[in-house]
Length: 318
Ligand code: UD1
Image (cartoon, rainbow, N blue to C red; front, side, top):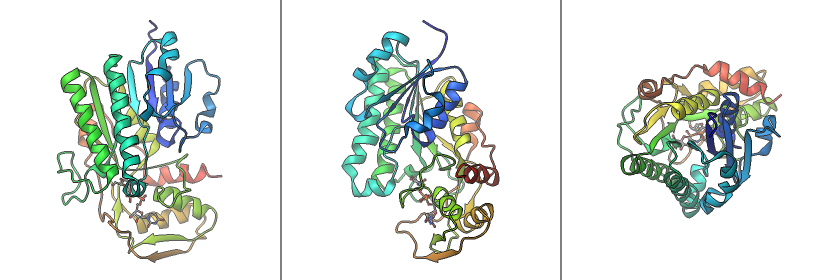
């Protein structure tokens, strides 16, 4: 078997997934992408079209991944590592369609882990979310905080973490759930009203349209650039060990939505009016990650300032 690492990336054509595939390809890995293209796009991987080390399969993980991967396995063997990012990503959608969320975000994870177990995969990295915490009272939010998820999305992410931990303890697979905070950057889709605020603000400010803030705008978030997140995924993927306990992926910096709107507007020429309206139902007022665990475990520290990340994000819209 070749020395070249073979990594399976579920959701590899999506926002975070495609940036992760870029890194793995640059590193010289063989990569198989599984994506159902519900939100992922082939054009996100256009840079690697025709590359001998990339295979892209249009598959829904919840239907199982054994059969679709069989042909790749005859060439490359089974993957040594899996990065599991495929998911239904909207919290609001999960509240309206809980069964769909269970199918994608819970059953889908178990399908991937069942493949990992039977194929003796050595490591599984998983995209969890700060949504597992719910409303917490101590900041920065540490991984030990009590998790009280307030949506099917958060419940299914937390449940998936337990499945990872079980596979570590009982089946000896190294697993690493990463709890992403508010990820932003190029390729994030601004189209839905539930898209990330930075993608919405950048898209609108770029078009000279107004920015609408829910509530007084003093609510804060920990905005982490996708280039940092994909680096965290890569570091976690190739680090030794992983017992299924989660690590936060954030910057440790807190930014209010008011500050954010001002910054985005500034980068886009300052033409947008900023308005305030009713608060979002169930709005979390404060969110910021404790970042030491990811640093201790696999040497991750976010490097991109919000200004630099916003600049790249806005430039990608040109
Ligand atoms: C984010 C995640 C969600 C995760 C949750 C957990 C995204 C898209 N959502 O939700 O998956 O479960 O963190 O902590 O990353 N806002 C406006 N105007 C807009 C859009 C948003 O003022 O047009 C405000 C929101 O009210 C909120 C902030 O911007 O205060 C961030 O919103 P959003 O990007 O949707 O993320 P979260 O609500 O933090």
